[in-house]
Structure formats: C-alpha cells, structure tokens
Length: 448
Ligand code: UD1
Ligand code: MG
Image (cartoon, rainbow, N blue to C red; front, side, top):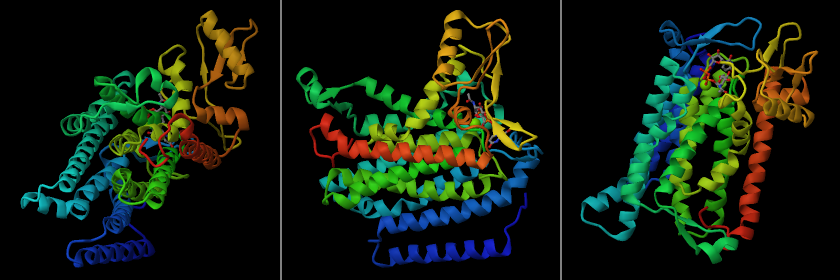
C-alpha cells in the first residue's frame, strides 16, 4: 500500500481540516455559547481527515511490526495491514475528549462558581455519563488490541465487552441507579406501570454490550462488511435521533439524550467513513477485532446512556439473526472452523458459500435438524451414498446469502447484505415509531 497521500488527497484533506478549524474558532467567538451540534459536525470532519491520513501513513509501520493479514477471498492472497481499526478508535477517543468544552463548558463554570441549580446539576450528570462512555470505550479498545495481538480464544473473548462495560455500569450505579422498566400496557394489570429489574438491569446492560460487540465481529470476513454494517447502524440511529430532535417541542427530556447520542455518533461516522475508504473492496487494510468491539461498544453505550436500548436491538436484528443462526457452530453442536468466510473460486473469480466437512457422523437429532434446515432452504447440506450428512454450508448469513442467490463477486455480496441491513433497520424504525403505541400507551416521543 502506498504510504503517503497523493497531491489531490493532501490538498482536499488540508482544505477540509482548515475549514473545520475555522468553523470551530467561529463557534467559540460568540462568547463561549458556540453551538455544540455545529462543533460536533466540524470535529467529525476533522476526525475523518485525520483518520484517512493516519491509516495511510501508519499502514506500513503496522506491517513491519507484524500486524498483517492475508486477504483470503482473492486469487493473490496479498498481505496487508491488520488492526487499523485501532487508529480510528484512537482518533475517535481524542475527538470526544477535545469536544467536551462545547456542550459542557458553561455548566462546569456555573457549577464551580456556586450555581448549583437543578438544570446545571442535570447537565453535570450528562457530563458524568459522557465521561463514563469515554472510559468504557477506552477499555474496550485496549482489550480489543489485546485480542488482535494475542488472538484470544473464542470462549474467552466473548466476555471482553462485558469487562469493557464496567466503567459505564459503575458510573450508572453511582449517578442514576434507575433500574425500572416501563411495562407494556397489556401486562400492566399484573406488573404495574413500572417494573424494577434491580441488579438484573445491570446484567441486561452487560449482556447488551457482549451481544452488540460480538455480533459485529462474527458478521465479518468480506471486504468492508464490518465497517459498512456499523455505518448503516450508526446512520439509522442518527435518523432516529433526528426524528426526535426535529419533531419534539423543546424542552423535552428526550432531547438531551438524543443530542448526547449525536455527539457520540457523528465522530464515529467520521472515523468509520475514512476507514471504509481503505477497507472497501478491494481492501488495502483490515480493521481487526479492535474495530468490531469498538463499534459494537459505541452502539451499546449510546443506546444505554441515551435510553433507547430497545430501539437499538431493533436496528441490530440482522446481527441478532446471524448470532442465533451461528449458535450451533459457536456452541460446538457442529464443528466450527477457524474461518467461516466464503470460499473464493479461482476459476470463476466469484465467492461461493464455504463448507464444513463432518468427519464423524452427526448425532441423530442434529442430522435431522440440518436436513430440515436444508429443506427450508436455510442451509446447504450434502449427503454421502449412505444418506449421512457429509458437509454443510457454514452457519453465517453471509454464506446463506450465497446459498440463496448463488455465487457472486465480493463487493456485490457486501452490497446485498448492506441493502438488507438498511431495509430491516428502516422497518425497525417504522415499527418503533408507528406500532409502539399498540404496546405502550405513552406518546411516541418518549424515550424507549
Ligand atoms: C471472525 C469469524 C470467522 C471469520 C473471521 C473473518 C466467527 C466465530 N468467527 O473470527 O468465522 O472468518 O471473523 O474476519 O464467526 N479476512 C479476509 N477478508 C476480509 C476480512 C478478514 O480475508 O475482508 C481475514 C484476514 O485473513 C484477516 C482475518 O480474516 O487477517 C481476520 O480474522 P479475525 O478478525 O481475527 O477473526 P475472528 O474475529 O476471530
Ligand atoms: Mg474479527
């Protein structure tokens, strides 16, 4: 990979950064009352240019240190820098830190000069959750880099995001301690309006982090898919935030949470687009597990602290399906090879579903289930002369897509899956905004 920027790239990135710096200076010039949303946008564009340049400049240094991987879905399996998600994550964390004065400066000043009124205290609680988000993301990036360096075993690494969520959970405990859930209307006669989940609420938040981070890591293996699916999810959450911010009368309690969510997501989109530019087909760099955990954790933190974790689950439905579909391999009911990414057919240049061979005969109920899945076109099973199952396609939706639509080029496969993710996400938002009234009496604009 070229390790420097071309003339035109350097010029455009330089001009963009300069423009952002001017916008930021301008937001400060009106007496510290700068608009945080404008500042967040400017910071996100700055984060984009920094990540774009740093990925290019650092790629070869990563390779020299041995952080490299082979592109398995190509004829010539060239080596390229691995773990470049660490670069985006670092730029992201610094952006969040530099951004703090914009939304919080006047509140810190008011609080320290003895203001102490209720609004200010509320804003300071927001600052506390913002900082806990930064701490949790720092933890997950450290742990993710550890995983990329040492290739931790699957059964250990599933727990990594739970450890990463500790800072957020502890600050949540000290600061809010709200562990109640709004009960759907049909259940209210039995449970009351609010149901206190107690410590289970903390377990729920830790589980959501585990799910969100790992589900992105296992929907992986073709160029661009890790970053692009994260971008689709981030853009859908931004759309959800905008629906609140534009259509709810101010001041509304949900407004602050959705602004908070924007502040976390806009820079994430900035660094991810820059990374995707290098990771899209044909990839020049790999993103590593660091990026997958980091992205999943951004969503978990955003959904939990922004109080819309159920909406988040709706947006992660394709990942959830992939997780459940993968379960037989993840839990070793059937063998799970180290890599389940599709198989590259050198003759056609297209990707086909990859297969797992069964050396030993499968247990009767498992064999029957696989045959049933085959009949439902949810798996591709091959049997030998004795009628025993000899092999099946690997249990991921990437392979299932190839079973359904036949062999195709890597970028078309990625585009198909992304279109599917977008369609499901938009339906999720529609359900959330239109049909939620059937199960929750409260008005659509409340937090969910
Ligand atoms: C997860 C998946 C594994 C999948 C792998 C691909 C599970 C349980 N694990 O493992 O099945 O094969 O991700 O990322 O579902 N690579 C490519 N092209 C790409 C992206 C990655 O060839 O577009 C290869 C490269 O050799 C790269 C390696 O995958 O070095 C990275 O794999 P890694 O992220 O370490 O795998 P896992 O997350 O453990
Ligand atoms: Mg991975």
